[in-house]
Image (tube, rainbow, N blue to C red; front, side):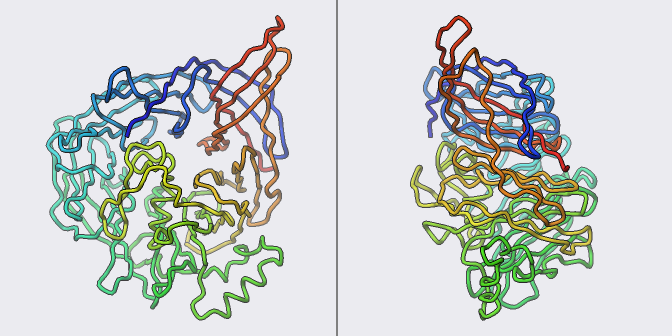
Length: 529
């Protein structure tokens, strides 16, 4: 798939006065001006930096160039970095570790089995390449970094293959053939404390119920242990599972549903430890005070309907987004929405995983619109599924963003739901970024507007307050202004980042009218007061 966008950047810093709307104030601002491509532009955050990047067609056929704009959390040290990709290669996946970015690049001619890691240090702005030769001849579905080792994951004839490669020597260790057909990796992460790779795998058992397996592999490719998670409740199975990688013990949380009916009906949470099984620490949706509370009658009708049902569950999807470690324990953030289109994609959390949490509009490995590959891994079968590019079969009609606050022992402290506009959209991740410390700050963008909520221990202090986007101070007079492709991202310093394109026409001091097309980075500060 080819990207035919031009990408010319000239960078300058504009420092604005601080303007405030309730608990949200506008801080620093960066603008990248000049001729800028249309979507997609990807935005990500490292330990001390934020960066935007885009791949563009070069002068010759099959020549691609990576363009990256980066700045630190103080909106300084800004720079544009240009990196040409190897001939006929595209980006497949990205991982960020500390302030180093790893881009997995693959030749579009897959039979050649050529791929490499492009590594960029955001502090020094220096890059290098590591060839991935002598690995299994199959597309890499995921990878992870731990010290000087790379874990590569592929699927061969519906079977997972895991290999560990030494960056310095190129030596490759292949994990013994212990993974069964149909096992699919949902998450992978390296544990620096123990020095092992952890794979979260989901699969179907003989009775077709869904189970999860945690496999730990050392840096020499030796399988150390398997931890099987099984739900002891009849007619109930685990749909989503997310792991917090903070601390010596891993906190796990997600959603559960009914096996005899595709539907979500609860959450679970707890630590991954001997003698502990978080999957059996379940709280049903009807036992949560805040899940339906935003409805006009306070959720009374929904709760009564739930109690009367023989198999109570939601009609829509409940996508577990992320776990956040905060002052109270662990926060599980999910979105509740109605799937419009092909109902198959709600089953098994496949809808959530491939068409929601990974964002097909901009994800490198899916790319329904603007990505590098028009396929995804079906988490039920492990097989690659082809998707027509731009085929508008999948919509998201949002209901609410929901939060469950667990304490450090996995007990529910409180929950709440932020109501969202019930309007269908193709863009799943346009909704909701959250920063959680002593209080929770929730911001989302909808139709070019920002909406903010402040929550203290489950109680709303502000809810869906509109935050007006500031007009830039240009010349003597701004004649016209248009914002587009807005996106909000939570930063690591307790603030948010608003990005987007801005077409502006203004009058200079000499009376001349000027047109500019900018891509901007605007800091949004929040306070608990």
